[in-house]
Amino acid sequence: MVSKVKSFSTYGVDAIEITVEVDSSKGLPGIIIVGLPDSAVKESKERVRSAITNSGFRFPGKKFTVNLAPAGVRKEGTNLDLPIALGILASLGVVKGEKLNSYLIAGELGLSGELHPVRGTLSAAVLAKEKGLKGVIVPPENASEAALIEGIEAIPVKSLKEAVEFLNGELHSPPVKHSPPEYTANYGVDMAEVVGQLQAKRALEIAAAGKHNVYMVGPPGSGKTMLARRLPTIMPQMSQEEIIETSKIYSVAGLIHQVPVVQRPFRSPHSSASEASIIGGGSSVKPGEVSLAHNGVLFLDELPEFKKSVIEALRQPLEDRIVTVSRASGSFTFPADFLLVAASNPCPCGYYGFSDGVHYCKCTPLQVKRYRSKVSGPIMDRIDLQVTVPAVKPEEFKGDKGESSAKIKERVLKAREIQKKRFKGSKISFNGQMGRKEVKKFCKLTPEAEELLNHAVSTLGLSARAYNRVLKVSRTIADLEGSDKILPHHVAEALSYRE
Ligand SMILES: Nc1ncnc2c1ncn2[C@@H]1O[C@H](COP(=O)(O)OP(=O)(O)O)[C@@H](O)[C@H]1O
Ligand SMILES: [Mg+2]
Ligand SMILES: [Zn+2]
Image (cartoon, rainbow, N blue to C red; front, side):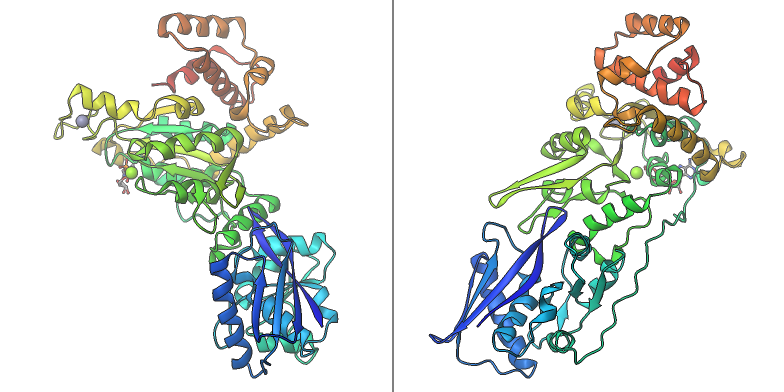
């Protein structure tokens, strides 16, 4: 008898439906699985066999042929343990058929039949809804993810035995109640805690308003990390759509305890991190830091210390807001729309141009040059704002408290409203995403502002790209002020965020 069980596997950030077909027949006893990579098949077979016998079911001396369809698609071995076991039991008539067709079922089996969580359940729940299915049957750890999606059942089962009983109508396992994720603004930190650093804070405000990437340069201990960490607190709240998008990535990455992601992510991978961990990849193709930072902030501290290949690979996500990971088994695309904040010391020792009277730069001019040249080129073209962050003087700590994140955010929100109208119906949504065409259309200067900029071009020798960056930043500065026109003081400020 042939049985069919519906399951899923992840492909990039989405789930795709996998059908597990099992045929039991006379023949050499054992399980034959087709459609999975060899290593995964072997392990899955062992787990399935042990789980079935240890759950109190009989495992007869028959030949079971398991076909995983569609054949051409890469599959996660462990997701399919439970559906394979259920398929075998269904082919024996132990599991009755009807409900098997109404749910996407997944779970990794332990040897005694207990279930362990899988990756990508949230995407599976979205898929179940699209396909008009009743819902998903998954391990308890995954059920709450699925319950983020309205209109489907998220059925938690602890073991193979429970799954069988549920499918046979012997166990009442109520779905986990649907609860829409809610954004929480409580980041536990606030811009008001940062003393001084008015220019850097202002640069972050412009960054948050127009989605411009930022580069902070300053000596150790000047507050670069502290500032970057507080950038999410001045960004708008996440929409439901953004929360689900980002949560899907975390679910696929296996970070299920962080699902749902209800705050803008702040990711700060170490400079020694591998390309796979930052860009995405590995043997089971997981999203990298650029995707975990989706809809939030990617902070690259000590940017010149990152591997050259990593810095190069950032170009695609910075341009396309997605990242493609190529493998022999195919190429996988993950969303990667983040705000980049990079930071670095001015030189290897940290004090070039920023002596505090105690530390003096000990680097040779060549060392300084080399250090800086590491991040030149394509990535710098994608950074609109550069700001120096000198150490705060002791007397500044006695001064007034800085502006709160809430206050700054109000201005950011206004500037975002203006951009929403501006880019309505277009492919981009923010000033920072404007190409040459949009710059031409939307960055109209008053004659005086034009004169100022032309003067800067001739005296500073701005490249065409730098010129465009100044225009984009000027647009955001004008938006923050609610000014339709770009005035000379907007341009003057924009010019100050350059090296
Ligand atoms: N402007 C500042 N306001 C308040 N505290 C500061 C400031 N700058 C530095 N600090 C203190 O110094 C510590 C180190 O700052 P950090 O952000 O790590 O510096 P950097 O990243 O530039 O090396 C912070 O955790 C904070 O306690
Ligand atoms: Mg730091
Ligand atoms: Zn130095």
